[in-house]
Image 1 (cartoon, rainbow, N blue to C red):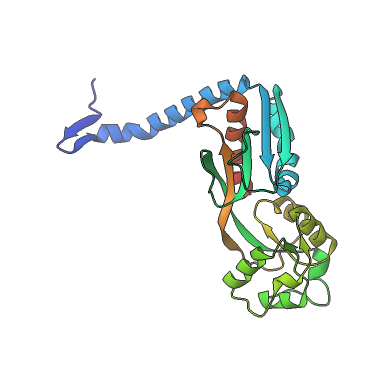
Image 2: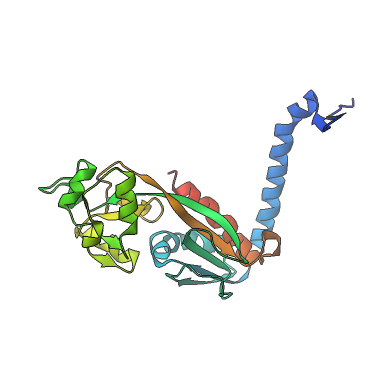
Length: 252
């Protein structure tokens, strides 16, 4: 029996009722075929792979999960370096760069890795202290820990509708890792994001004293020097691995 899956119209080609009925199954089959081909490619991935990312992303998210990636691809020789600069335009000494900010990079292939929300985090001991944190305005009684100039706090306080607090008076750190170390030790309240403090929240070394999150206008981006089809297998394997890993980790 022959089925007509398409019919021509004046405006082009449309699916018939039979075609629409078959579409979900065909789509699943094609997705599975693509996955199988990608898996075969991943099995043969080998060679050098240089990943550049911010220190906070490396220590808080990537490094604890690298064993998973390398166990899938034992023939890949990984080199991980950290950078606090946003600039990659004049740098070709990487295979994959991860940067947090606005995508302004020229002559690079940029993929959205993850949008983030920001929210206050602190030691559990700080929440249970004599000056609890029950509403945003209570932050005026606590030390706010800043990454560089405190711009993140300014953005969060404004969007949360909090006035009368100057976050720039708190300690300033050039490395976000030190901000988080200070928060864990009870030095003050830090501003964490939904990627880099996820593991701390799960372990209980940090808590969210306020259930007020603000979506950032900036995001984590994945940057490569070429389009997918021109990437070495080792680079493609890393790209295919990290994007779903980061996104799924925010939903668990």
